Image 1 (cartoon, rainbow, N blue to C red):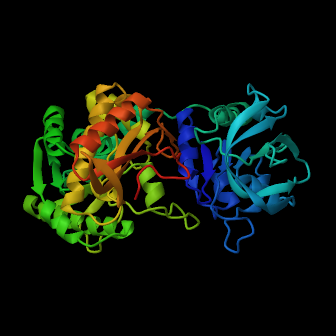
Image 2: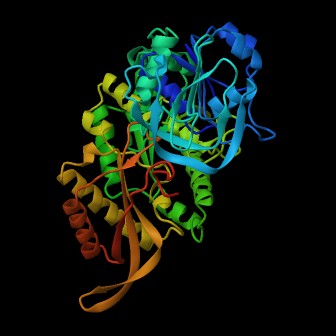
Image 3: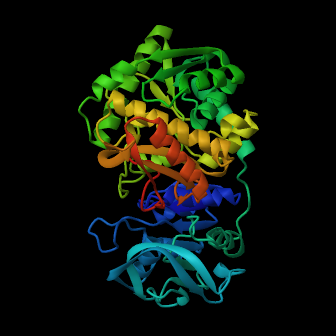
Length: 506
């Protein structure tokens, strides 16, 4: 087992996920975990995550210094390296020139960098950095702006790197983690999704027993796989509800009905509630306020549906790791990025939440879906946010704007499918910007909305690069949108990575 100390960085869970991807069990621990507690857990290795904090902050997270004397290999990432140096009497300073993004790392001979080239592309995100290494350490990596980008103490097997190996932008990052796990820490492979799936079903049976579960199904991968796990565990005691918020994509209701019928769910009903959500969102422009309003009504409707069924105890959700990271602080040291309607529960909710997929990432969820023998076509669907098109309309949600973005989304996705690109990109979406621009159509002046198209390539949805869609395809998409969708006269294509941007706009 590998213990990942979570200092509140948004990639903390991603580190644990990378470890599991290599076949090793991982557990996240809070910084306050004592050295004795860690010793009792008997981990084969320890990894320190990054953090939004500086080591100089008054309330910056620290670890019990006795951890360094447990003879357990340690890898400190970004803030983790800074903390190791700070606590072991090295020197950490705040630099005016911060590093953010891709850099070239020059590597030295070290087991940590075995089978890597002498120059590697890595991903930085920091302000502080180490200027003097602790006694017993050597420098094993540097960049133009960070002379101490990687350090090691071979005797104690303590390593530190200023960059993030867990993100896909660090091209050989997984090799670095693999070297640490297997060549330095002698870990054993024991993480298997088939076994995990069986454990989930067993756990659900034990927890739910003969009680009833109500769950929303959206047609998305997460809710579908979670519902299928629940179906395997409790059968007819699972009741599915599709809440038509009026914020859905074109044709979504019929697609969901097709999926439900093919998978073989028995208890299914549709709640048409579009007018209710649209009325509640009138005049609201703040993204967080939108999510909270949608959350409030979403769960109120769930309670109403549960009362119709009688004696429902649990509310099932398709929440996965990225939802948890970006929606709430994993530790008291984390920064909150945004709330998520699946997690922002209103006061008075009488149903107990059950989340079969809360420990998994998107690609793992799809693999579990394959193990469950779910139709690959359903598993290949792009993610769609719980708040729906409401967070793809920047500003107030109106019936006119919903109609526009719904048609634009349909054209965008249809063209990606017809060009064979849909299954090659991770997620594609269109956003309606709250501004208008001047245009010319049919020799007449127009003043209409601007649409931003976004498509990203990603494996884990924690980091993403913009999709290199051929110009000829983008041109066709743009032409169709401005010609077929009244109210739009300009189309943009978003070429921002995540980070710094998120995939969705709100």
